[in-house]
Amino acid sequence: MAATKFLTLLVQSMIQHPQMVGDELDEATRERMQQRAVQLSQEMSQLLQELEPRPQEQRPQEQSGVAWGALLFAALQQWQFWAVAGVLVLLFGLCWRLRKRSQEVDSSGEEESSSSNTEQEEEDEQEEEESEGEDPDDERDLGRIFAKRIQWLVQNLASRSQVVEELVDDLLRVFKMLLSDSFFPVLKPAIGVGSAFEGWSPREDDVVYRLLVPLKSPRGHAFHLELGSAGRIPVKDSCVRVVLECTCRREQLVGDMLCFVHNPEEELRRNQDPSLLSTLCTGSYLDVEKTALWFQNFVKSAWVLVPQSRHYNMEALPSSRSCKLQLMNASRRTLFVEMMFGVQQGDSDIFLSSQNTEAIFTPSTTWPESYAVAEVKFFRHMARQVPANSFHLKCLQLCARILVGTGFSTYALKTAVMHLLTTTPLSGWRRRDFLLRLEDIMRYLRCCLEEKRLNHFFFGNENVPEEIILPPALQTSEPFNLFQRLAQDPDAHAEALRDFDELHDRLTRLLFYSR
Image (tube, rainbow, N blue to C red; front, side):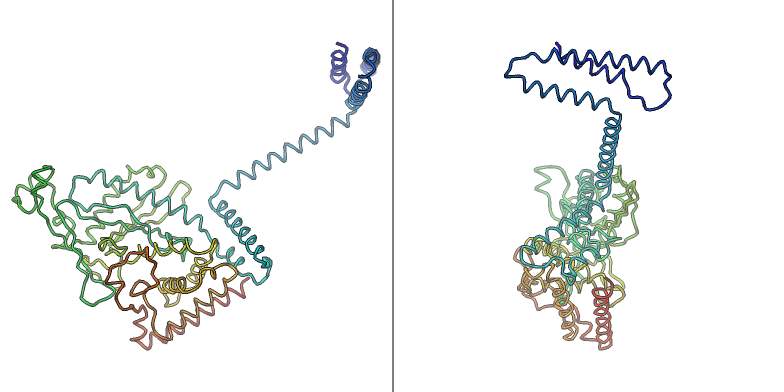
């Protein structure tokens, strides 16, 4: 009871006896406060005396408690105590607010998130090299320098590729739902192809996310691939011939369609949708331009049914052999998506596709051979084989950047890197070997130019990974020379050598004079 009263008086002294910090109070008020202070002090002394008579074994502990109470009471009467406490509270609140704001900024943008991921990668690489006895602070470590300078955004590229894949999958589901009873081509799940889905991009600012949409023949139809002129490799003038098949047995068992072969045309026109031959074909051949136009028009009408239509404004861009879309979200971030079409050769990873050719004019019934699916499978295979944080894609990215304005194509560069990945020990693609691998790429291109020969990767190449399925004709064919034009044109060869010298100079200036 005495202890409770002691605490009560302590609180009263805090409330009723504030320390005078100015001359604002008059004399009468100060006198009353002093009298009240004396009264409280007397009562506190009396209580302290009442607390003293205790058993002998408990006295040291209670005396310590009383001493602490007295010290606390004395401290509470000092205005400096409250001033310091207030400052500490303000500082604590300020630090908490700054920390919260910093966390919000860190999670606000995709680029900042990827930047932190990149820093984490660099820390992991540094720890790895320190464990191997290397000096991570070596000024000659250009790998770390260019990992920052290239503005490598692998995380952004991967996340946006996933967004595009999900969007196209949803779009194709709408197609399947609305066209299930039609005789248009059956659309299979899209396959991401090209540099963005391989994990690199020569242009990060305007990346085009390309996907190949495999086409299957609808009911009552069959696709027959005509692989162009005999002996011409690679095949550039292939066609897809559409043939009607008898479905009389299906008509009898299921009754969901009339046989296009054995029913009168008048009855077919009256009771059934037209065949594929009457819609997307020119003669007996599947027409690339008609297919692309049909697909693009359907995208425009079906876009509102796609969930992503709530987040993106869609604009169809002009294209005669594919479907190109520009997607813009509320923050005005733009995605460029291109959907091509392909017919698979058997069960292989090679397709006849709607992609453009190098020819000035390509007939609308021509479907050139495409190796894009096999290429993306190759890079995914290598990603599982190379060491963690391998620099092979960064080497490819850096070299692709300096190709602008030269006669070299990114495809030739990618082919060279693919050959080196299968002939160079995979452990040699780490950051510490960055300069050596760049030198290997340049030396390989130089040798190919001097020999006027750069072999296509998938033709007669024993180093192709087994998981990539190639047609037998491709496996046993003679290597195809991508530099064949240089062998036939001396002027083109001389120009290519000059371009290579410029390319080598650019790389040298970039590495050693622009730190």
